[in-house]
Length: 174
Image (cartoon, rainbow, N blue to C red):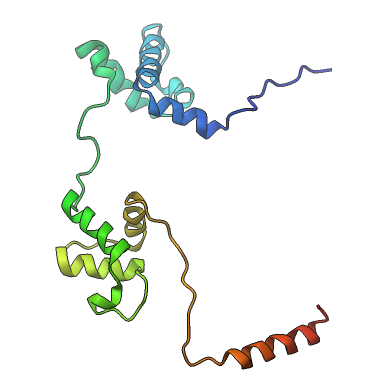
């Protein structure tokens, strides 16, 4: 009979991983331990799976640690691509989405869509985005995607109710 496998029940793996990223001390500790293992002779290629990063990143940590000490293991400011929209422009888009109707800007819709926002940004800021990125921007501004339901003014509510009742009778459901 084999021993039972040890399991973590109160946290999901994603939640545990988020703890590493949320507290800089954990991040530095993990990087420092990777540097320690390299100092013991472990190859960075063998450590990449354990630390869920590339061997090149581990190599960078070692070089930065040797050059700057613990400070070299901290994340540097200004990492990543510079945002194409300024903070003022992003705030303007937030106001646009929350307070202004697309009809006020010449669109034939009651709510904003990703493609309309792409067009509005291109027209007003001369910046083009792809569909996937615009939804990331919308999410970063604190908005969520909501699927619209079409409202057709020419519909007849009485005929719709009659149709629904007839459909229920033919389907056999009450």
